[in-house]
Length: 193
Image (cartoon, rainbow, N blue to C red; front, side, top):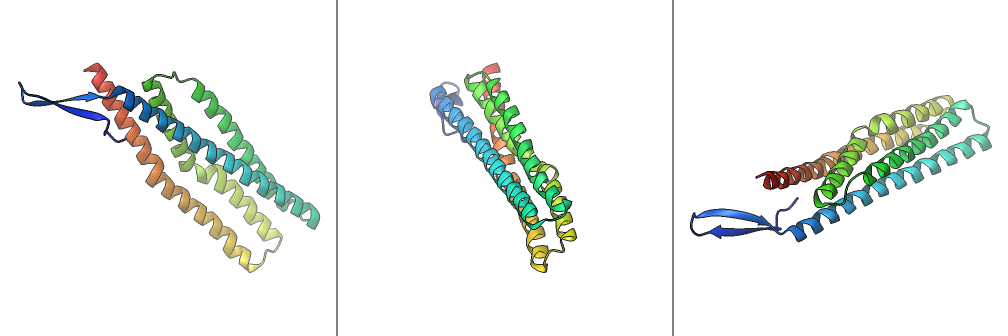
């Protein structure tokens, strides 16, 4: 987090710098960051629920209309269950958000918790999304004798999803969480000093 809100005051007698926090500006910045992270978590969850539900629904209808084998239904069910898992985690996160007090440190703790949630979601993406969706999709492709282009497109899509989520984790989620934790440490050191 930026420390532009800190004002430097020079102590002429001791020739030492003293720092004071513009508390109102700092609180405004922290609340904005907290709301931004909550909004980002909402967008991720709602987007994933829409994508998995629509994909699962499409696969279910397609399997039914084509009279496909059970493996086609498994892929559809996997996507729908993933959407349910995301909904379950969203409900848990919303309960967790209500447990924080609305002080400056409470908002900062909420921002850190949401940053940790986003980072954990990205870290475990392989296990709760790619693995179940990938295995059931590949089984469906094997047993439905999928055309060659699907063997390039589907695994390529899963690989691309993995790379994008990993890049987002390393470039956005972890640095954001670390900056917020550093800010919290600085603020609590100032209070305890």
